Image (cartoon, rainbow, N blue to C red; front, side):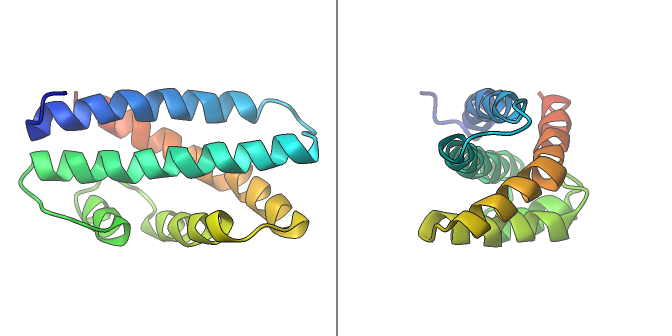
Length: 133
């Protein structure tokens, strides 16, 4: 893998694109089984991870150094790469919760947030970054 920042973010973007497509496909089933719900949450977690790391790499290619997800999200919002910083910070918080706890009620809430808000924000980010290629 080429380590130049401009190439690195584009390579990570390709992985983000694949993950986002997989997440969108996984949401097509209107009533998933509990195991499918858990899978959707897991797919969201790695899609979100790729999203913030793609932002980090993009920002670094622009000369902006960031280390942590929250910093990357704040810098990306300041650079007009994200249109709703609050939703992205909520995604970060919920992703951290999802990754460390599991119960059925939390999974259903997570699935609702993913379907009704988060996937849309991930799609918007994808379109913004696609236009930067």
